[in-house]
Length: 231
Image 1 (cartoon, helix red, strand yellow):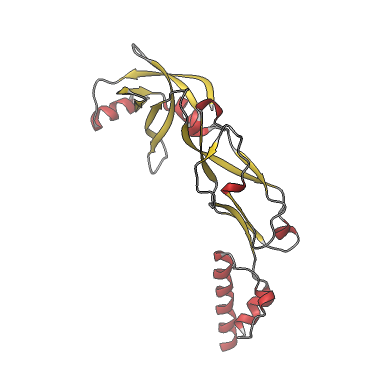
Image 2 (cartoon, helix red, strand yellow):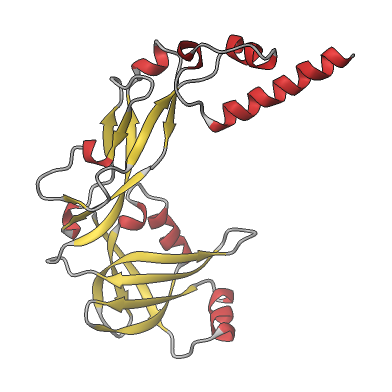
């Protein structure tokens, strides 16, 4: 999404680890502007301004202007960034020049709304599988996110990328069968007790395939009961 933001960048005449270190000591971070038929330009930018963009609602999909001192002013998008692994400080970013007349591929977050039938009535669990989908659209049309209603999902049902309502001016680029979320059954205490005692479990009681963490928890409870019997 296009934002009325301009980030001032200073050109860097030297590259390498030592030059990057000096840039960070001076309170800026090294960056590169490239793409759209132009030459790659090494610059330095304010990490505070970049973090403000990355942590906004549109995040890395934000299209803003970068003004290179003594050079070009062009719309860009942050396509890659590097954080210090311990403190999390921003160390470096790559900015791609954006041609506002050409379509591009971007990943957009998908949010869910509503209480699934399989959760509030059937006692299941709504599990998120994929939190974003990739679409193709013009730069000015990039949405902040998509929201889908999952109220009608029962245990065993799922929502796929093809089920996300996308405007006509956009095109889904992710595989249509990509699962966004699904409702799974949670093993009941009765089922876990029967399994621990070695009794047969009726298919209706077992339900759908259980969520991995729940199965693991059930095994721990089973071990606890076995230890109690030995005593």
